[in-house]
Length: 95
Image 1 (tube, rainbow, N blue to C red):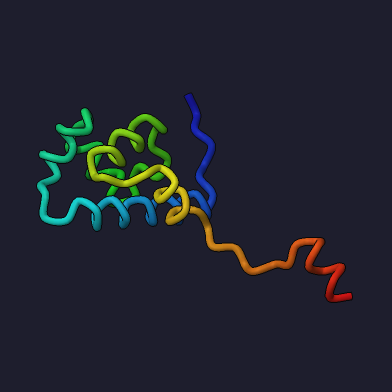
Image 2: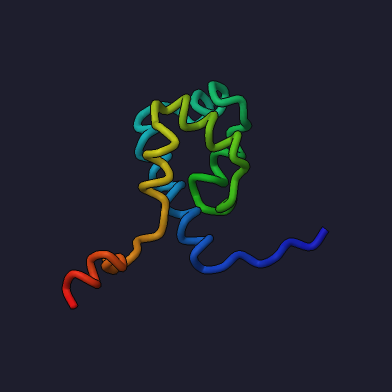
């Protein structure tokens, strides 16, 4: 199976996810968090270092639950930053 190369945005998102998970893990060991989430420590290591930038949804959900993070928080903090663009309602008022 040939995998499509990741875009720079996908790589960046994976790095943000990894940083967030490392921060949330804090002083807990990688082995403890991985075991609680039902994944291998190597999988967690790859996610935290960005080497697995697109982990499966259920893996991310298990890690979020183990680390006390909501999926909404993960999405909000891992989504790409978008510039402030007025929506059409605001644009019509200003015109």
